[in-house]
Image 1 (cartoon, helix red, strand yellow):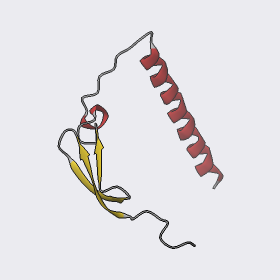
Image 2 (cartoon, one colour):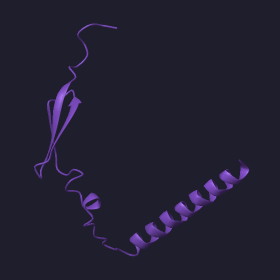
Image 3 (cartoon, one colour):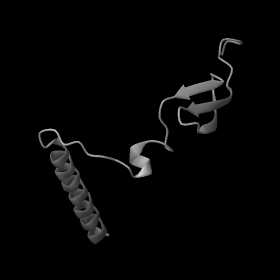
Image 4 (cartoon, one colour):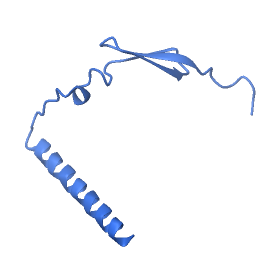
Amino acid sequence: MKADIHPKYVTAEIRCACGNVIATRSTRPVIIVGICNVCHPFYTGTQKFVDTAGRVDKFQQRAAKTEAARVAFEATKKKKK
């Protein structure tokens, strides 16, 4: 391995536009993001669905099908044991 070619891995801060600060490690000392888990609508529970041409309904149906298939697969997997 060559010496002195790798970037420094330092303690870093991730700063959100809402004011939340997260401590981590990175090659950059400060990372500024526009949205984080504290202010994102999905995580705060204030999510709004804007239904354009039934896309949200189609997605929710697909997600329900996938979940049902996963549950059925796990049920057959447990029966085989």
